[in-house]
Image 1 (cartoon, rainbow, N blue to C red):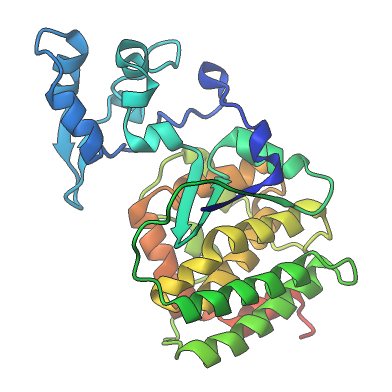
Image 2: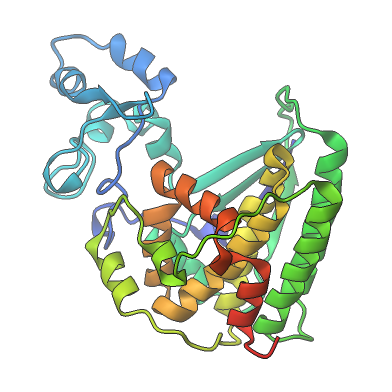
Length: 323
């Protein structure tokens, strides 16, 4: 299997209790089936087994989760901001989400793509600190690809298209604003080739897009209140922010055939940097609020297709009023 990772990935290291915004606070954590099976076999005399059994519950989506403690803290997060479950039974027996965070892992047949989410402040800082184009490492191992039902022809077409979008974003011949307009036009044309794009015109204000129903951190709410329309800065971080979204989401269109929304996510990601803070902490807050809340993310994906303020024309005018 071919493994693809951002070049900086190998330098990532969790800072655990020193983290300024713990990943063990704010989110409900799913208990995956493999972990649940392991917990069921633990001796009932163990304190950690008793604690696990006390906090298992179901969320509104039917997932088995750990009920949060006060202040939305994981029930296993101790006063030193370390994980009692990790300490008691080992990191390898914590839930899948905890073992892999902040990594995202997508398998596409014989290719596995891995990255680091902006929702981790350390990962966001690493991307923000890059002073050049975001590069990727590739390696091949002996692992066999899992059986899948991916449309191979569509995947190859999307893979080639993503290379084209990446080339536009990493070109030194255009400003970031020019690049964003170019990929919007490219995405619009490609979407029409692949599938129809159901669009309904609603009238939500652009800033209201980011007022998520499920609020995780009050600081994000303040970011929105203090947001200002600004001109997009021609910075490496803005370029790499767009590349992050294209790398993470573009090939997901092999499942829903919605290419244009993936392009829009890259553009909106740069506008988040521009309007709400222009630093790694801002994009981290947005990611934690949106990318890691199923409710908020489902809403956001819907808005990308239904809201006039997120249409190609409106986004282009937001990037450059003279378009």
